[in-house]
Amino acid sequence: MVIQTDMIDKSSVIPIYYQLFKLLEEQIRRGDLKPGEAIPTEHEISSHFEISRMTVRRAIAELVSAGMVYAQQGRGTFVATPKLDNIVFELNDFNQEIKQRGLNYKTTLLEAKIIRADKELRDKFELGEDYKRFLYFRTVFSAEDERLSYEVKYTIYSKSKPILESELKDPSLPGLIATHTEYVPMSAKKVLQVAACTEEEASILGIASNSPVFLIEQTVYDQDLKPVGWSKAVYRGDRYKLTSYDGWYKKD
Amino acid sequence: MVIQTDMIDKSSVIPIYYQLFKLLEEQIRRGDLKPGEAIPTEHEISSHFEISRMTVRRAIAELVSAGMVYAQQGRGTFVATPKLDNIVFELNDFNQEIKQRGLNYKTTLLEAKIIRADKELRDKFELGEDYKRFLYFRTVFSAEDERLSYEVKYTIYSKSKPILESELKDPSLPGLIATHTEYVPMSAKKVLQVAACTEEEASILGIASNSPVFLIEQTVYDQDLKPVGWSKAVYRGDRYKLTSYDGWYKKD
DNA sequence: TAACTATAATTGTCTATACATTTCAAACTT
DNA sequence: AAGTTTGAAATGTATAGACAATTATAGTTA
Image 1 (tube, rainbow over the protein chains, first blue to last red):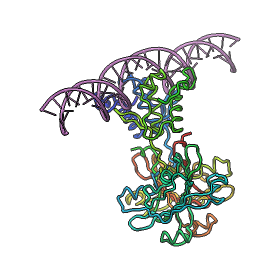
Image 2: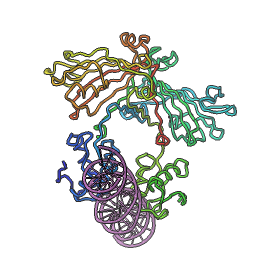
Image 3: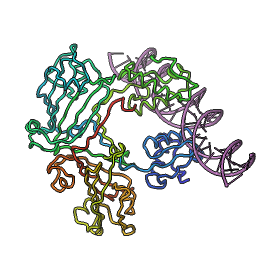
Image 4: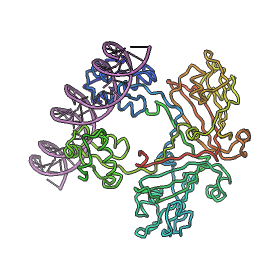
């Protein structure tokens, strides 16, 4: 057993399970415990530090959820192999960093109106002939007076909440759905593609036609998985990038 | 308390904590428990079903890690508001789906050689003048005889393992590092951008110059956060897309 | 009225124990 | 030699209880 005995302070305000979690994490990270190798058994750790087995399990559960070890009933608990081919691109929204940096940004409403449904739109929303109207929004996001992205959004029209406010407090698609329809957005599907921008998009964003752009199509569903909103956003390719940190260090 | 009493079977092979987790999840998902609202206290649930409070806590811990509720000591546990603006794009590797579909695919090694380090390369690896050599790889990934992506990779040259095998068993950057160097890849940084492809890339991939492409630059680090590999990959924009499912349903 | 205090309620941590389930290997049987 | 049984070891589930830490509220006091 490779554990140092003097590393856990039972009288500390820091929970024992957390101290043990950090201690094991450190040993795995430093390579004292190598991928594929078994970590000490719960009983060994428990008796070594004179703490309850349930407390040990709590610490190991943290390691499991961090993906650093995996447990096999009847065999033991083993150090996982880092999966560096795993790519995870994550952002609260595409403009999160801009907003967090304290830059001067705004979302401008170019247009908002009620439109008649055509077949293409009805198909996107999986609706029949009886749905005749949708809400239609066109917005531009800009930071430091530079236009960065352009977005078109559609939501189902609800008779009960037809108010189109001039100011958009929450211009996100789920926000618009919550404000202007009777539906509650519960889940969403997003597809990210690259594209060459159209002339219209280029002129709005002030870039050259056919410039490479990110294109994100989003469908928002309510609690019954019924589509209640759809949007298509174009982001300047020269102003956006996605960064991903993979492997064990990402949790630090 | 909105819980149905007849929904938990103590004699079932399905763990009690899991039954309770599913039951609470269902109630939140259906809207019986609404965002911001408090769920029943641990003691209430515990005495209602006549199960231990620790078992209740286990179930609630699952809800917390799923992001559906949050607990506040001294106050209670509350239903979270879905964050639909959260975008998570995840893939084991960019070609995972192609491989899983059972398509006929292969990675072709166009070139592999030892090169002299120039300043740009040394800067990427944060190395001094003493590192003079690197390994250099050029590969093409294709499926159904169509070329889909092109990748250039660099790793530090290790005297002890200079063997360049003609067949690449694991053509991924971490794989090449593990095979051909003395370093152990432990973490990675990836940056995804859009770009217009160069003439060279266009001719290799058989697409038009300036076509929009995904561009992924990757830096791989060892356990001391020392850069040990770098790659740049170009993916045809008309053949790849990233899909993301957000919200509470994603865990099902 | 305002500030402080005591108390109850709620979640957080930890223990000690019991039994179930799975795996593996040694011992046994055929 | 091959298959079977048995038992030990390891993780998985569940319980009952104790005390800590935090929050909100009701009550008390200045």
